[in-house]
Image (cartoon, rainbow, N blue to C red; front, side):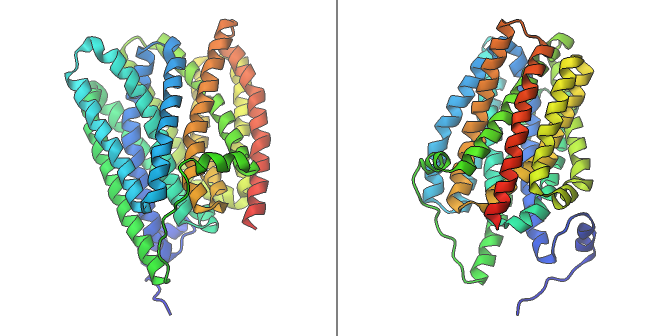
Length: 428
């Protein structure tokens, strides 16, 4: 017999919000803390990244996206090699601490490099942060789908996402409040500290799961495999190719909105600090809406609608949103659509999408997933970036690009429905 953990008042309170068993509470809360620290660190830097993208000129964004795509491709083989050769706790720790060192290096550069060179450092920072945010979040969710079963993922991923949303709100609020008072660069140190706290959560959670496995007489095995196994497995699997297409269509739409956001911000705000504060407030609105959705809707949606329909909600919203933006191309409509879309991604689409990976092997959870979450995602950015440049050359404005994006969102909706049904079949 195994001892059943006592159900205290804190656990009973949690069980009113999320369908969590007493023996899962500690694991779930550590996962929440990990995601909280990770997204706090990212959302401190995100508004700074957005402002630097505007400062470098929207005409240069396609080249920045190209640099991001190439950088993303470059980091995949070293990460896959670490996954093959090191225990899970070790390769996740090393990956995150590499980025801590990068943040500290950027802090020193922005503090001590002459102002006339900051534009180029800002462009490097834009590319680096674009790699960083996808990399660390992809590793986080790979860890989650490795330690939680499909049945647990459906119940708990929404609440774990809630922890990340709290972190996003905290990071965005810090930047919105302090950027104009102490300067954005000083916040880099806070971001580095938060990322190191995320590492500590990884180590605690990994040791907890390892202890549970050893109690069952199991020993964690190295994942092994080849450095390019993630790529080859994607090319051989219709299911993984479907996820690639889903991600590609999602990111193309997101890139269209990002370019429109940069253009509207440059027209509406002439001051750099005001632009940074605007982006931070936009992030804050997204995270507050995400938080409310995760608290009251996410778990219920996945449970009542299932993975298939939940996965289809964001594409359906995008079809309607792009059509409305094309008909009424004004800042207010854009802001509402952007906030709803991003909140829907974090609160609804992301937890449902991560469930797709729970039916894969451990090797594919880290290698194939990482390849899709980083290179394929950024490939969609690149397609979107150059498409925007082409549409601008054709004279298409905000309305025209929105009308082009609407049918792509409809195709995205079809892929989402197919993937949800395929996941259910593989789970059975």
